[in-house]
Image (cartoon, rainbow, N blue to C red):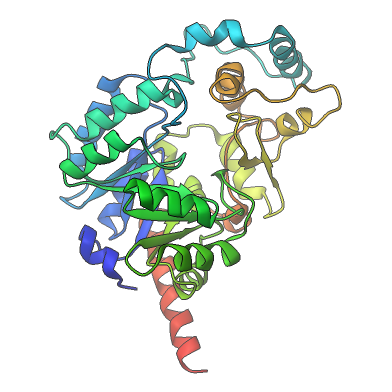
Amino acid sequence: MRTELCDRFGIEYPIFAFTPSEHVAAAVSRAGGLGVLGCVRFNEADELDGVLDWMDENTDGKPYGVDVVMPMKMPTEGKAVDLKAMIPQDHITFVERTLQQLGVPPLPEGEGRDGVLGWLHSVARSHVDIALSGKHRPVLIANALGSPPKDVIDQAHAAGVQVAALAGAAKHALSHVANGVDIIIAQGYEAGGHTGEIASMVLTPEIVDAVGPDVAVLGAGGIGRGRQVAASLALGAQGVWTGSVWLTTKEYENLNTNAGMTEAFLRASSSDTVRTRVYTGKPARLLKTKWTEAWDAEDAPTPLPMPLQNLLVSDAHSRMNSAGNPDVISMPVGQIVGSMNTVRPVAEVMADLIAEYEETVKRLSSL
């Protein structure tokens, strides 16, 4: 499974794992892949700084990356509270009424946090500054919303850090390359979170052909088995970008203490997801639940643009996920959820990915 990216990053396998859990990211890196820590959950720079300290100490000296959410068109100043006046009262009323109808209780006294700050451009910049401060040792910065601003790309390159960006169409990939992005993540329709409208089988070779042989492409979307890794490499990718498959790992329990969410993943089929704007304001694939169904009702308002939608539903997400009802949660996950049927350690998932990949290549070589 060795490709040029293995030599570039000093990893054994070109398996990149996006996860909001530092425990999962570290375990993937220790197992020979590249764990990429999602930073959007960190509202304060000091909090991310402490977690990256932990990553430095718990990856056995192996490399890791970070993932930020940096919408290029959002202002760099301002806090979430300054945006509240822009949210229509009808939307606020709808959210509260829906939570009541679904039987979602308020958070316990003293719990809860402002979950929208990490989506703001200004906070994402603080994440970049912490990661590139010289104190930590990431080898990759990925932006979930396309190309970072040019000065951020230059900042990363000056620190010797590669930059990756997600693309849902060949034209987006070409734009990223023109902006100086090093690695294109070709994220297909099947993926969890923000995703475009083209399936991986079509998207990956289109982007590979568009950017040419000198730009590395990671296949993403619907990858959670070794056969799918082999398929992505066959389509021209130099590695894979995975995410959903790590949500039911043992290490993820350090972040997700919600047994209801785990139950919802374990019982879901590949058809139990929906692509919608209700999570952030941009199209994202989520687990299909009573919450997403409520937003499809005739009396539901149209989701607001990012980051207003984040601010509108942030408290609702905290309440639903704290309640532990598998029928009423809000969580991005891809169509690979149908294969996530057991809770297993990261090392076991990695071993299975590699073994099935090798079996697949051997079988194809015999044809």
